[in-house]
Image 1 (cartoon, rainbow, N blue to C red):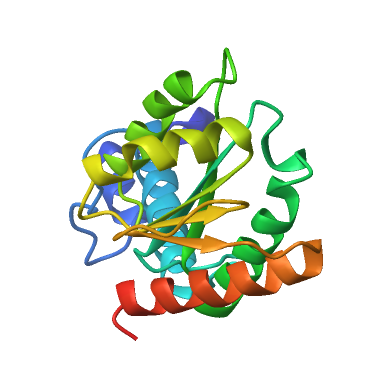
Image 2 (cartoon, rainbow, N blue to C red):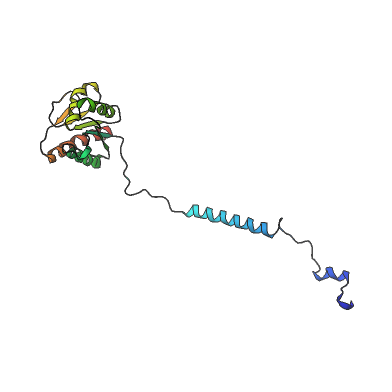
Length: 194
């Protein structure tokens, strides 16, 4: 044992008396680090999913019923002087009933014949009540209401009631608004089953 050499018989005894084979995971150190990182990411993802707060409904979201009232207006839409109070009354009725309200403008020539096409669109749609305001929409309704016997109409302006058409002849905008609101509210509540 001179010169720093060690006897081969003594090399094994330096580990200890009961030294056996050591347990190691398969693969090298790099593979073990990757596997540990993936496992950690999975645990973190699972913990995030479990403790993530529940989604709440948007407090501004409004849930509507299936009931719908529709308005046929001249080309300028709800800014028309005859259509504006009608639209205001419809919107108020929508707030009370949670029913939907919508409007359709008569595009193109402002004639009864052209407006009949747009009236047919509303009558064939999902409108529980159809209102008309303005010269061309009212003229179209007066000439075509009998074509749609299952539809309910309200003509706002001068006109004569028919089987499925009622008339709002109020002169002042506030009167028009309140009468339209009352009629639309009643129809939307009935259509929603209330």
